[in-house]
Image (cartoon, rainbow over all chains, first blue to last red; front, side, top):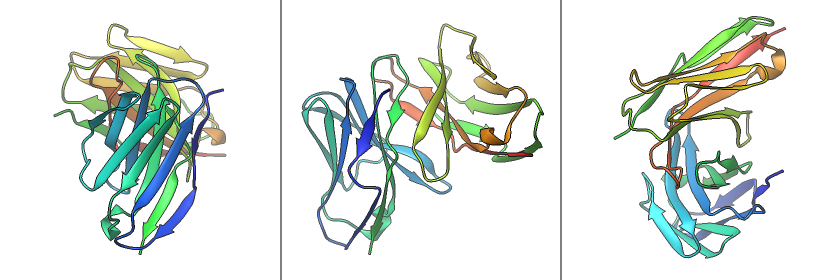
Amino acid sequence: DVKVTQSSRYLVKRTGEKVFLECVQDMDHENMFWYRQDPGLGLRLIYFSYDVKMKEKGDIPEGYSVSREKKERFSLILESASTNQTSMYLCASGRAYQPQHFGDGTRLSIL
Amino acid sequence: KQEVTQIPAALSVPEGENLVLNCSFTDSAIYNLQWFRQDPGKGLTSLLLIQSSQREQTSGRLNASLDKSSGRSTLYIAASQPGDSATYLCAAGSRGGSEKLVFGKGTKLTVNP
């Protein structure tokens, strides 16, 4: 079975902090994705990566950056956390033309 | 810009009923259409993926259809069970290979025993 592991289920940080969310997949997938999920807004794509060191902006990249130094790991970085970044963050991975596999999510609260 | 809509937002049915969940998309130039299930507080689980050249896909009690020309997909659940209670999301794949998805907001299904 594909395993997508997000480093934390719950995280509480303060405004202005630099926050790192980590995601690891064990199936050698080329593609990895970061989404945020908010009530009434659904899932929105923040960034995705189709190869090591390659990245593309999604629909809402402002305030975020990403890093993919190894194929199995995709990190989402909140450069200076703000309260409007309080959300559920979901990581996914997949191969071309195949379904995406999701982690269980990180519920991030920015105080 | 692709927009995906799911109606209804919530649905409650008695156990054993057959039901249909609807998904519509504005841009018919999709590469695929995917259906996911999400349980409370969890990530998404892939149910079915229909490539743009296909009309339907089946897995067990689930059947998903795709009509690109009308911008619609449906997920049919046969003989519903309480364990089917979850939120169902559809997503349109806008670029082949990278699988960049645009999601609908989901239909929350409750199956009552």
